[in-house]
Image 1: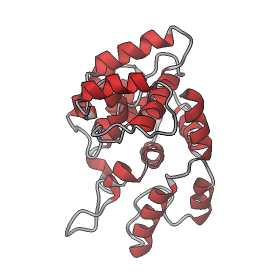
Image 2: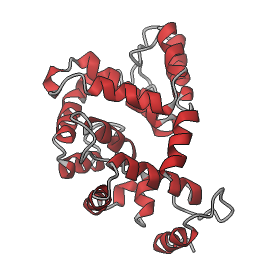
Image 3: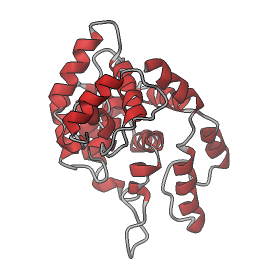
Length: 250
């Protein structure tokens, strides 16, 4: 499943749709500077030529450029924020950029109202303080960052000092592997402890997460509402059926 995920990461560019959506908002109103790349044709084209693997590596390079969250300027924080949202994809990733009704603004444009909370989240992630991290996004302390998307930011920032013992994305897919239909209801302590046990066998936490992600994508929909029995691979079908029983979908 890790190998399958690597292959998909090198071939996938679905995040391009969100880049286009954000740029279209800017073209409709040039004062609507939603993301750091708006109006920069060269940067937009460069981003669209990346794949998931190279985009992930670029985000990590920015995050690892400095060791303390207070050393990052707001513009640097926001650039990383934009890139993680893009990496996460159009569904969910586009929410902070949507125009607020009857205004010329958005959650992203109102960053001054939440960026300090975001800095706290990032620092807790760097410190691997997973209880506070996941609980903050579970409680929606930062607009548009709940478990599925907020944990993407947690995972990236937790890799500031390296991949060892870092945190993972806990979205509906990862939650589903543990029998939870939605990420908000998952027991993140249980999941992190499971990651740590597998890490002892020589895997990184990201390898574990990505293997779970690809396994889940092969057998389940994103809402954990059905099992796909005619999937591309029948490897680990019995495990998939055991999970389906926990999800009460068979």
